[in-house]
Image (cartoon, rainbow, N blue to C red; front, side, top):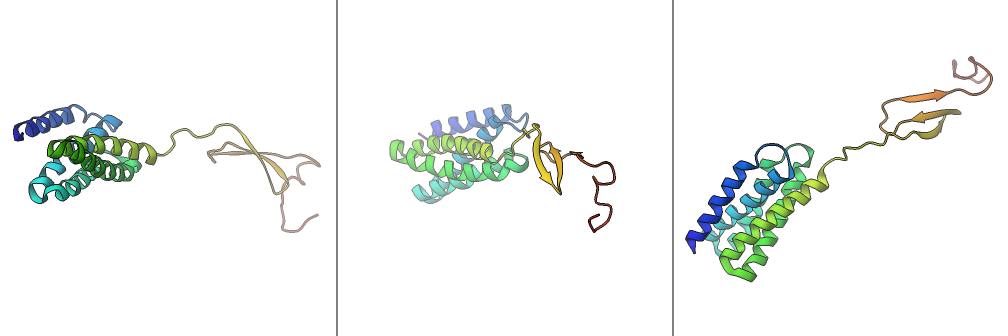
Length: 168
């Protein structure tokens, strides 16, 4: 049984080196999964069933952190922790110690990707004009706040601006 665990770990590390190209979901999944699986194996050897769960949580979080860049890192850590621990618990119930390693790997991978996806900032900003009224002037704004275009209606140049603090 120990030989199969080492074979799974070796295959995981080989897959991890393949996926380290860019900040992608594949990279995050491999990091969270390999970290959770490795943490489960170390935790089992140190602290039995409880150690496997704690190791899966720590390994999934560390794996998600190492393989994710930018603002989504926190989400990958939280997802890797939750997914790794949950996968280890379910895996232990279904398949014993080997099931815990496999479950933690799958849970850590899925959790890290889901957490990263939720925490990623929205890349698309609205470019449709938004009309609003500010200081009795019509303003056209473009959702991202980059520029506003003022349209002055009415009595001419002097009355479109508040040149002094009092009204004319």
